[in-house]
Image 1: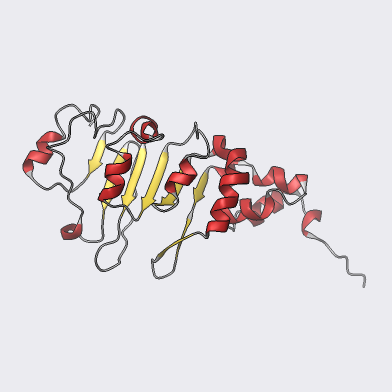
Image 2: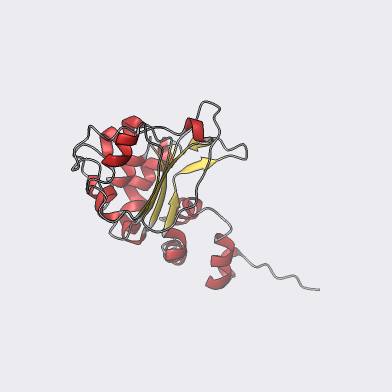
Length: 216
């Protein structure tokens, strides 16, 4: 009986896509783009592999690990400039967020999930002028901020369109935000209509109703 050898590239595109969908999109892009094979290059740029990108690793024990600098460097230099117009959702940690967001315009980006969120992130990206402040305030419709509490437990919260969640693992560890002393031009959104947040005082709650969140 003759046995024929079938290589990966002998498979039709439909089968290759099914195989690659078993992998993380980051792995597909890192492994297939710029490998001197036009067919694989085209497949890797399909929306299936470029719409949602997760730039971190969540272990079986719910630990959050950053990608290595070499991987992030290659994405920022060679990969993201080619696919940024396809990206709709980014899952980031605070260490790599700025580099990744500055790579391109991301005209179709509407969702960001940010891990290792803290009050310094709020001060830097939500209350001062930055190159991508407009992304957070006028373009993003789905935003979730996930922080680690004292017990290093992570809680993820699924959310709907125009929904912001700022969450930790237990209610008593939710990070309180103080809004009453911030002008309405520094903490606002023109798209947000649902908000789940823990505030310091009742006055902070009233501050949310001063017009800064027009669609809430």
